[in-house]
Image (tube, rainbow, N blue to C red):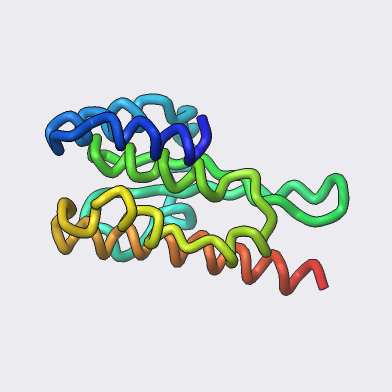
Length: 141
């Protein structure tokens, strides 16, 4: 699934109850995060829910690409992770740093429909991925 497909599906759903259900469904599409990856190194700080992001760097083919698996103990948050990974997983560090995920989530209307705690958690997830991208750029040069 692409971010444009998610955007199109969101536009078809007028009610936020339907949009929340869609976000939960997106969360169910996440590839399972192996149990050993549910560890303190992968845990995202700043989230009220438990959130884990596992990163692998693919250096084959020149510029590195960051691949992610993610998980949460909250259904809505799993859906937010699915959207975030649609934007960022498999991308180059440069692309990640050029892509404003918060702007995309605002386009979907999440600013007005997420609690402040979930918004802070979303920012923490984005910042974690952006930090990974900065680190990958630093080690590549």
